[in-house]
Image (tube, rainbow, N blue to C red; front, top):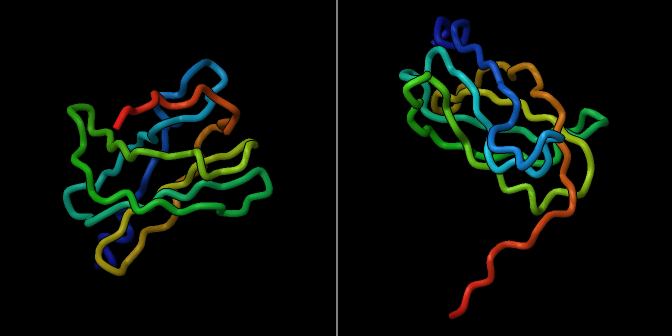
Length: 119
């Protein structure tokens, strides 16, 4: 266990799938996890400009893609408009790794409504 905690180091890339060059309203975060085969999940913190965690997302344990990147979906709609970063940590049962470095900043801004559904 101790070795696992020592080896788990997450590197957070800029939030993936940002809708334009200003990184507004991302729909996912992409990161690498060197010990992905050993962890059991990931937690994603959304951090405001004052350094406070405003939301923690239980990202589960999605498979890594061919490049070794793990993708966790984000829903930014419940978050107030403003500037944020993301930090990620791996979990192994109740054990948690240290937080990753913060991502690049991104903005929660007014956006286009979702496609309407007809019941």
